[in-house]
Image 1 (tube, protein in one colour):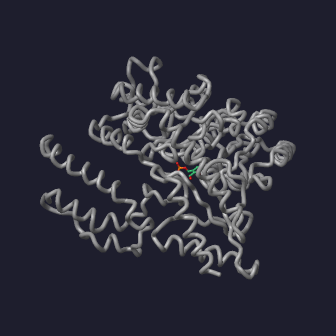
Image 2: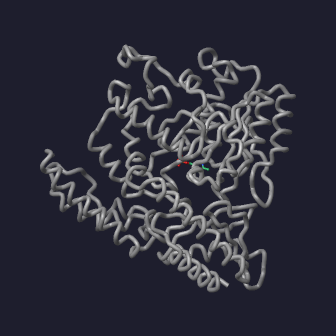
Image 3: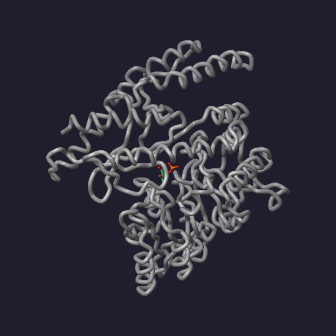
Amino acid sequence: MGPEEFRRAGHELVDWVADYRARVAGLPVRSGVAPGEVMGALPAHPPEVAEPLEALIADLDRVIVPGLTHAQHPRNFAWFPSNASLSSVLGDILAAGIGALGITWQSAPALTELEQVVCDWARQLCGLSDRWKGTIYDGASIASLVALLVARESASGNSQRAGGLQGEKRPLTVYCSAEAHSSVTKAALLAGYGAGNLRLVPVKKPGHEMDVTALAALMADDAASGRRPAAVVATAGTTATTAFDPIADVCQVAERHGALVHVDAAMAGSALLLPECRDLFDGIEGADSISWNPHKWLGSVLETSLYYVRHPEILVSVMATDPSYLRSSLDGAVVQYRDWGLPLGRRFRALKLWALFRLEGAEALRARLRRDLANARRFAALVEAAPGWSVLAPVELQTVCVLHTPRDGDAGRLDPHTLAWCEAVNASGLAHVTPAILDGRWMVRVSIGAEPTEWADVVALWELMQEKAAAAG
Ligand SMILES: Cc1ncc(COP(=O)(O)O)c(C=O)c1O
């Protein structure tokens, strides 16, 4: 495909995307396809000769759209907001179109330096001090893995350069709350700590934040029994209820043992843009690393996850490699992001965030976040006031955890009842919410914050929930 053909096709595809966004509100939120249906509707073998763009677009409409659960739908309240603002989409088109190869500073100086700039812009918007230096990863899961690799090497005196963890006499231990994201457990296992050295610290009720007294006791016990506490992952905004672990207290306890602290703020980090929300992150300056995903609530296209460290030199000492073909006379004088993470080749990810910041402006981003906070509070008040309904956890940001008690009050029927009305809501295609287990029983999470979601959409969801819960008994 040459540039002129690309121009024609590109215009058509941009039109298609714009039309899709314009009509998405009229589509069922949850995809109704059965497993294998999408594959079955597509040819089993690749084409030998070029097809016209029209054929591809026809398949988009015929096969791909019905096979989507629409994250950009105004009545998508499932999981977490996964906003892909169209301004950021433009940045993604640029990233693909420019096709820069990010392997060294020299291979695309602008790729590296724009990443430095947008990470610093985001830092400033979040009110973080200039001690933090950032990079962009694909997700917060990788950030947790990297943080735990760094902690492993710090606690073991760079064991990877000798016998690795297998040579350690004192097992290294990791701590996170019982409500931490599953990616933290995965990271601890992949980083070689072993499930037996991962402590899931109990949470306090009703907030579901980490119980720091329990953390202190676990760390002291481990140290007394010859283990070496290496890291604590504090969650700022847990997945189920958006609970905030008390970061300042966590840092104090961790410091006693020389353990590093990583803050996983994957979803909630966007709230740092709002000065009125920053108390929730109190103590964050004392942590060693922070990750948060502008690709969730803020609106950057997926795979824009910020990772900040206070000591890039420690990160680099763990992650750096030095093959001859990547060396240059500038080494040491420039940032080489390949030494800040796992992959060598990187896309021009910064463009997605750059375009979002420049084409939306911080004021509009803050206004949208505030709209969602207000909608969540209003929604929670409606739920609390309705007979048979309750809100199960404090509404710290935009997630509301709800429960409806069956008419007969039969506790034994609670879980099936919750799953039944939740499924009825989702099967209707009119809205999408997520069931999750909290304190051993099913509840329903309503995550408000899709970019096009207005109060009228929340009201429509609430009416649907009441209808389906009543029908479920
Ligand atoms: C608190 C928390 N941490 C980590 C993750 C995983 O993030 P990612 O999908 O970017 O790896 C999530 C995703 O929902 C999350 O809520």
